[in-house]
Image 1 (cartoon, one colour):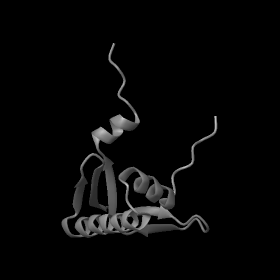
Image 2: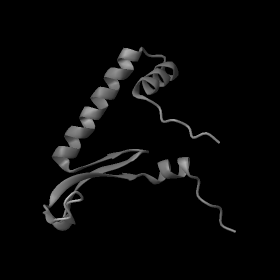
Image 3: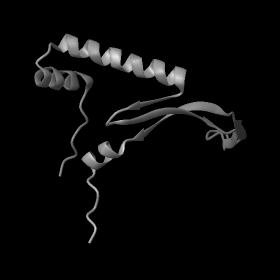
Length: 102
């Protein structure tokens, strides 16, 4: 069985434009504004919940030891902030239905 390819941005815009009876330009502008809103709020508040989809949040990693793959030299990887995403239960259940209990 062939693996389905992920949708491109153009395909997403086209699908939403058809479904919502909007122009592709309007949908594209909406997606750009939506992404900008998420980026700003995660940066400022350190977390943002997108209802039905999940939660973006910023967390700090600890300083750790690593290895340079080309030289084998041991290096220290500094602590840093990273953005993570936790999928909402509703989204998880829609994609992978929970197993029925016997």
